[in-house]
Length: 216
Image (cartoon, rainbow, N blue to C red; front, side, top):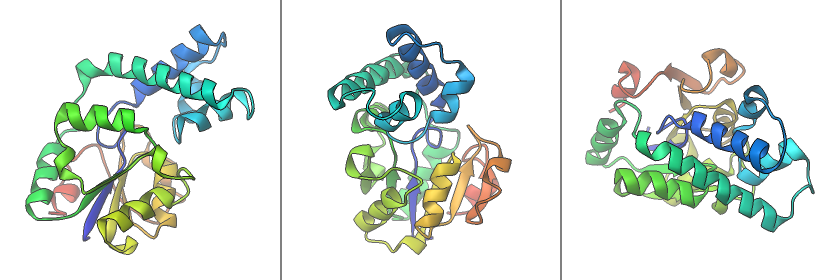
């Protein structure tokens, strides 16, 4: 492959539990609901506004209210996750080797810039990425392929020459619809959840996996 595109949450950092926890707290303590963990966890994909609409219905909140709730959620997430923030095992070495080999790399995430900046700047890894596509940069979230197609365009690489790293079925589906193969990090979903996606090349717990290290 000529380029690598990484999802962020659950793919580069193992933080999805903290996102779920922050949303659940906000829903139940600030909005007066009684959502269980099992109700919230499956909704942890896409833009924050989409999460709110899936759980509360379209039109429940104004745009200003959704922005306020989104920021409150991210502030709580960052406060709780910061002491635990680190890359998945092997990823630091993988990024450095790919960088030394001049392989273009991008981030294609449904996270807002506030959270992407939190990870990249705290861990000082921004220089590895030639393009960053966030929730604010696309009109349609995954599984629509816009995120990954835009990342490839910004890197100057044709989509079929890109390999996507993902952790959720909606992300792998977005890669498929963009014409890109995918490697799945099994931080949040078992391989069985991806059985319907023919573009998945491999499943790995982290970046020390022999298949992944063999890409460089």
